[in-house]
Image 1 (cartoon, helix red, strand yellow):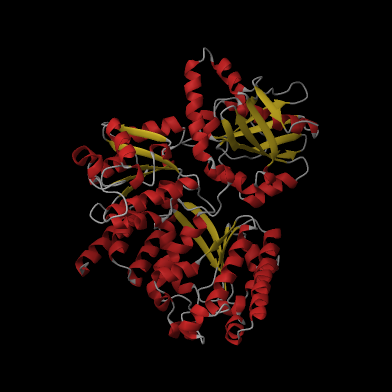
Image 2 (cartoon, helix red, strand yellow):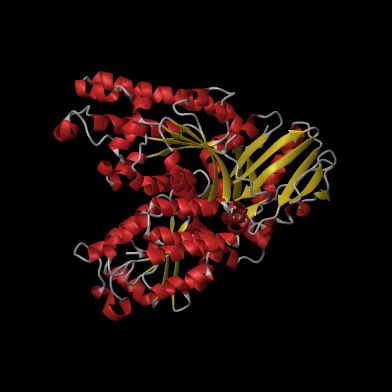
Length: 638
């Protein structure tokens, strides 16, 4: 229990940090204060402190500023401090404008509304049941199934009209909140559980329809507030007195949970999930210490406490099935580990083949993770590390701050899956076919590396791969994969612009515009969609806005083939020059000399441009960019 004196001291630390414009200090202090106190006064204190250091948050911590508009049919103002605080803790700074009470339809449909004039980057649509499906309780009570189904269908249809109307004229990313199943119903608990058209079933069906609708609209995500309310208790989620008195749909005690859920949900529109989970073995993947207990002595399987570890293994297997790469980072003897996996195979949900990489040795774990990052061609910010040893965890935190570290609760192994699932680092609103085959592609990459070591020259090796590049519209990639590449590619990304789906569609639709992806396969497998280029026509020039390539395939000439394709398409459309732009970041140094290496000349444009940009030009009338001879091209035939 936190004392008042401790609380005052923590507040003073936050205030002092804010006065110094020390963003990291203020955020760290707020985390400590709010971990011990959820009092509204403390949340408001932190919100006020953060408001005074908005620029420092962006400049020092790289917090993303988002112009955010709230479309609502309920009272939201008392929750905004909690939303602002949770956003900062997730590294966002929200510039919030709240729409008129109950004016949601006009704001979404009217191209001259306050929403349209605000030009937001993010729209939060927070509506209550009365506005979305006010007739459902009555229809469910009457028990007329056909009417209930018709009402659900019409509700989804009305919302589709609103969202599609807004999307036609606005490029902001959208969060649509679902409905909470009412805690009280005239059907009673037994009726709600047994009647096919109960209010519970109807609201859940409507939520499924709204979620599917969001999946059909670009840059739109569904916020399952009912799941959140159920986890924390529907009975306490809403204060009935405050709702009837002021239309406040969430109880004050739930503001923090609600705001955290909102931020976690809209973050999937801006951030890609982490790609690799590195797990320790002893007292993490299984109970006990292999070197001391031997294969038969470690805890795993159907009996307690082994079933706790088995549950963690099953969780990892589920992550792997949707494209999260698994790796072992353990201080152990590799022969002993292989023996354990063989001897206890019947009691383990994973095999050695479940892991794309192994670092089983006596090296420092931070060094092992660095080696993994190099071998997998991934940034350290793609990694999550799980270990029960507090000392190992702290060492990785200090040496590799980009890596998310999760300390496994060794004394409570049953809670590890809960600890992991509460974190947002593997959240994804969309899972693509490329995600599902990621582990296979990394195993194929290991085979390529083995082949490369046996070849006499780089050209000989590349020619032996049988690389085929297929070019297609980004809208057919599918579009979700194109947006995913824009969101997560850092190392070979010439401008690192995080374009939403709506803007990709604009490039594709514009006269002389290009939105093209490249799909790659070779003798070892299909790497899927790995590169993207966006370009637009400006006068007699074709200007490349974005050109990027997954780090998995860098160095095989695919980037050159993509650039050559863009140049060929630009010349075919009548452009005389191809203009490239490079914006340096902390991570894209590998492509700094890309345009120069392909015959482009650096120039300074006459019009005002960003001082961060470096421009290059290539004369299409006198020469052409060539694709590497070892690559077979598809999709560029005419």
